[in-house]
Image (cartoon, rainbow over all chains, first blue to last red; front, side, top):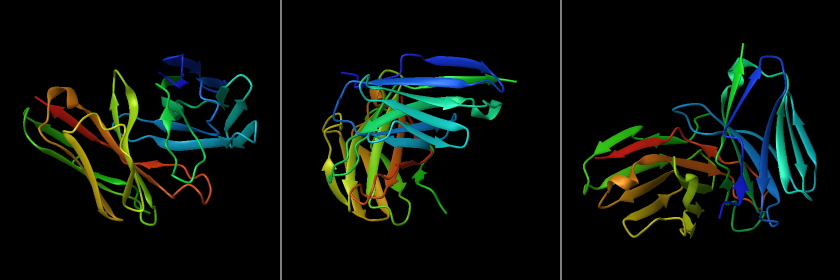
Amino acid sequence: DQQVKQNSPSLSVQEGRISILNCDYTNSMFDYFLWYKKYPAEGPTFLISISSIKDKNEDGRFTVFLNKSAKHLSLHIVPSQPGDSAVYFCAASTWGTSGSRLTFGEGTQLTVNP
Amino acid sequence: DAGVIQSPRHEVTEMGQEVTLRCKPISGHNSLFWYRQTMMRGLELLIYFNNNVPIDDSGMPEDRFSAKMPNASFSTLKIQPSEPRDSAVYFCASSHLQGIGNQPQHFGDGTRLSIL
């Protein structure tokens, strides 16, 4: 049962344009969402997060949007740069006292062309 | 600041051998996580510890897998005996314990394990 799903395995955009990566989830108990970026031969690197009490969080070129009713979140990167080329994972967790157990999506390979 | 440190980076061994993967979390972090990444299953959580105590090991595939955290600065993931289907990249991550605020997990660079 894939509770977090990234339906696009790959995305290609031109440098300077907007990249939009999408993620859907099924578990309504998830209340904290994160995006990670992963380069080859490295571990995932935390990028940005959002809690369920918000619908938008922005950090520089990166903005995450959350639509709870649709159980959908997206990551916008603008403007896109060649160095943004990587695999992007969305992840979800529930806020609990036993710690944060993350459930990851399958990842989307973003390629930003110069 | 030093990040999460995993060793070895690569491990190639024969089926049936014991494999031990090591992790040093970020100093001050009190939650530690072991993940496995495969083409078929993506990134999946195997086990996590809070304050050195295993909290959830439901992701551990079978009894051949075991994990320990003898102190706050060291954890091991052991596979005995190893099988070719255990070949994957194994990641360790650490974070502050949730409850003092949502804290992202920080990942090591992983151990690429190949069982022949």
